[in-house]
Image (cartoon, rainbow, N blue to C red):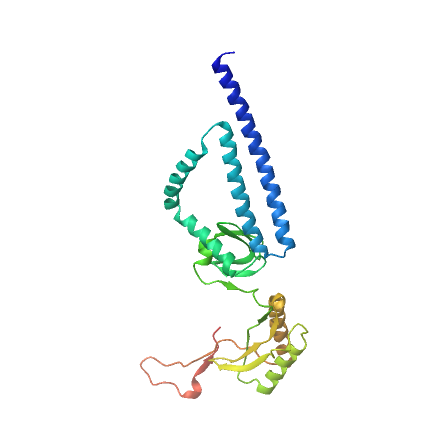
Length: 280
């Protein structure tokens, strides 16, 4: 057997061994990732932190497996690491945005402005936090769309977390005509709120006359509810207030204007000749 044949056979065996190391190592990395995730879940670690640390752990293990496989082929990993480090510096300068997203992901873990399952509004989008990756956050919208937002975009502005507290205040405005009796309107609104068992007794609902507009008297209706009941209560109260106003003969006005007609070049008509008109 010649030297070339011996070298070829040796390289072939090393290549097969490297492939085996990669396949077995990747399987072991997945298994270790799964076990570590379950261990953190049993320890009741924050789900957001579990996913984030799990992703980082799996990535590091996979890098180690790749280096081990390359080393088995005969490539000097020390030199390779030096080359990769130099290339990494250049790539890092070119991918500053990605590094910023990674740093923002770390900030999400440290400061926890939101967690998985929270409904948030950030980065120009809104939805339920479905997953947090190293570089991105995945949101699920109310109509079941999936939105992937860079972590840097999520952390670069104001974050509104609608799920951070157990209760929320429902803000409604009920507009009535000027002819409506004030005591009757207040009584009807109080009865509508009292009839809904989802409204919390504490803090007490706030019902106040808030403004005298051009065409209507505006009442604010602000009950407190559990965060999970917010939208159902909002829609149901809007419907019930309309139904009760109809039953009590309380009008819901629309914009109105008084229009006065004048003859061009002539004296104005007397006041009683002016024609009031309603404009939608």
